[in-house]
Image 1 (tube, rainbow, N blue to C red):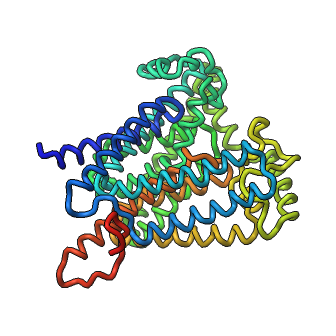
Image 2: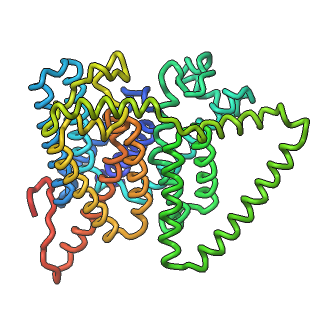
Image 3: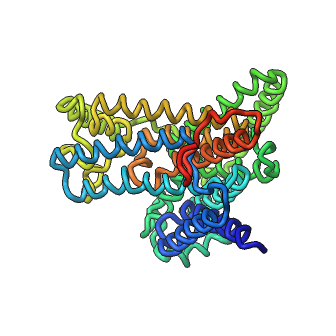
Length: 446
């Protein structure tokens, strides 16, 4: 096997393994992840030396988006220090808003030669199946229905789960399950989109449908209404899009789905009338899940909004920068500068001017997504929809406030970069097409 081919395949395997470990096991295996990352970087850099064409490459629009984001982040990190942010808060702000984006920028630049959309779709499908299974298995255990085969293997990685498991919020000593189920903010809408576009990506229909059902069940067991919201919104958007293309098929599908739903409701009604079933564990589970989704009280978050907005009025233009906290708002006593309501907190941290600047970054991200869609076709849509779901869920959850949660943006951006770079390279390889689009590669600007 040629050295270049070996390096490319081993780098691809290392990157795929890194993504799987980072998403499925977010809080352990740091040394293994670091080793995979280092090998991936070294292999790509060696490929850069061995091959004549550039391997390390950022598309011009990707570079503009990432550069703008990092510059704005850097300004408000410094502004936070200027406004007397605590040392720990400033240190975390540097890591979250500068260090991790720079690492992601470097990773995005080396990925065009080692990943593609179809491979990444398969990886995320596998991750979705694993996380959904673990979430469901933990729920079954919490409801004292026994241990699902395969779930006990998690004890070897997270020994604390063997004892600390009766909290339905999935605490665990290492905080595994909260971190893992957070992945559903991206994977739930992504899995819904796979039902519509999985065939174009080359994924088995049966596996895509099984994953879809598992994700829906996992979303129900988490009791997180924002997950249910993004799933419903994704289904509505895809149905509307399909209706505009083939209305007859959508109407037929709606009739079939309604018929199945009526049969299920009739079955549950019959089952509920059975006197022997009143105390069943299944009924307790369904009642608990129904209570989670039917509770529309938002007292905690309403109080947070009031406090954040009141504090924002004191510094309406530029805010106070990253790393500062609000004395009357303590979500985490050990880390008071962390906020749950990401976008409201951003108003407090960056002010109206900062919101406008980040709005510009959002417009750039939309343009980047649109260009990737135009060049790559519908196969890119599951990643775009997954990213949108993650951004919606971030409104009520602090996913973007730590580096390991920012993958919901940067992983799709890496794939957008792959599509745009490959498209530009194919155009540049045609003699009849003038070189009009730019790339940032190791050799400079083309």
